[in-house]
Image 1 (cartoon, helix red, strand yellow):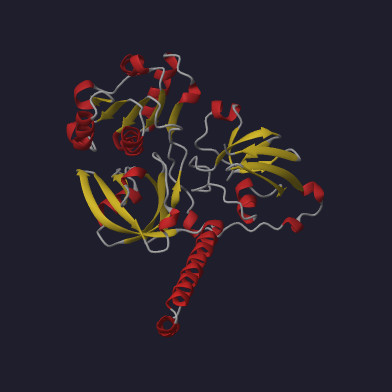
Image 2: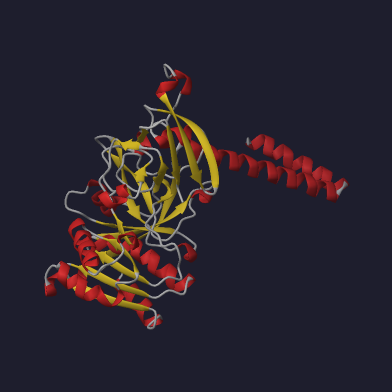
Length: 394
């Protein structure tokens, strides 16, 4: 809306108000409805195009020597894109002199019920460009481009009793889950948290405060490598044994997560109830990738197309699926708001389950053999093998 036209409209409404206050209110409501409609259309365009949103850094918190938390506030018009679940992550666009930008995924350490700013926590890694840039350069007032929250590392119920494992900065999504359970649910939580030494424990004070405030619902067990050495599978199993029947969430360095998974398997835990959060460095950049364009008519004959039947958010869709296109590209091109983040098989944001038919994946960095056996696939990497494929996102 141009400034001049807005000024004119204001004058017109004042004139009408002097004559008929009720009519003025009706016209004002109509303007608000029109503006809201324009905002909704813009937001839908952003979502369907796979475009990003903007946030501003409102506070930088030094958590430890090598970890900072960034409190982020969405820019005007983008706030509606940032509803999230505990345990989800944001994908940030980070400037680079070599490539223009790189993208990195960072979990949210804030919890939805807290309101206010979103918070991601970044731990510096020796060779990590993104983490080093943010730790060294992020300042209050800085604008960043991000993709909306994504990820499946989130509990189905906040009333369930949980067993939580975190290693180093893996505490970030785990803290979001833990705070949500304590504030919004009725569940009990046991947290086993491994770090190199006492000074590297992120959120040490906050965890102590939460444990003191909820002594009957939260137990925090710290493991310090400087004192106890690296935790073995046997030691982790011994620690976890009293709560092995609970649903478990695991996040941390790869070797730590592998050891926890082996420990839980040794305790007889149901693999489906052990959730492991994996992040793989992105080789591509979703911020530099144009949204998919799918031309169904470009296929030489009907044999080039399959049919996909998709259940998403309680709705059923049937789409033509060219064999050269991924499922995610086809859904987005059809205006279906399927979840995704990295678009290169390096996160689990787009995971879905094949109910019937068969697909193949071009790349998979996160799903394990047991997941594949259960029918789970990554929509951003899946192309059809059979003529008919049914998938569900539930």
